[in-house]
Length: 254
Image 1: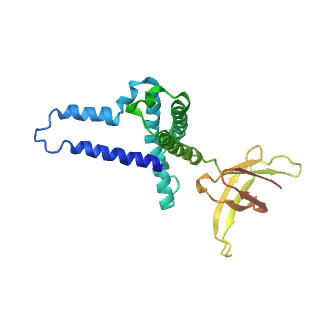
Image 2 (image 1 turned 180 degrees about the vertical axis):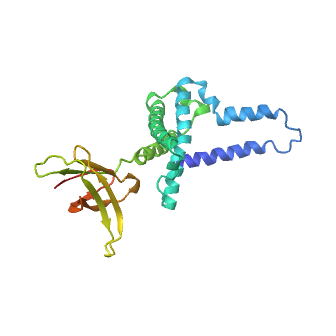
Image 3 (image 1 turned 120 degrees about the vertical axis):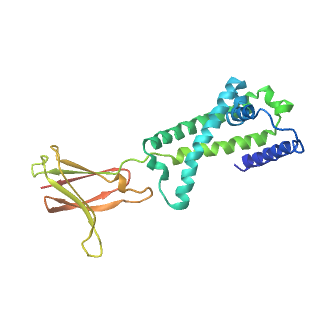
């Protein structure tokens, strides 16, 4: 990353120097539409990258990949600074699509950079060592390693959350499932005020099971989401521990 930043600053200085070469001109700027078109095509669209098919495709993958990946990096930074959790998730379905694209492009960028490194260090393509492209090999390798760290970071941080589920099965003394039993899961304030912080109730299905979904209540990083009391038809039947991103099961008897 540091080496990449150094190259960026050096190129920025070169760009500033080239711009300053145009100072002092009094001629009016002509053909502005074409100038804007060239800037969009060459600077933003990176059209020069496709002059060589293989290298062009790899460069496009890295270029587009980093634009998309940086969106996820922005979210990670915001969540870290403000203590939020996936702040962009409110956009709905599109967020799921973007998360999938992040991971796909992270893998593609990794593959592309590995191919770049192989072409430069193992295959040793001749044009890489010509004067116009000559660059210290160690510097180029540092840059490639720096690029590798970002998609690796994305792949290790952009995991999809699993649902946090509790399934209670109610059986009778003959171990047959009980249909229509009223199952209540609740957690009360330890101060003794008997104020229920979690209190939900559902009826069992034909197979004697009832499912409770706590995914919306879960916040990533919690250890042991909650220990809840179980009541069936008004009678206490034990407790169930709800662990994050797991399907937690408990069987009770009438």
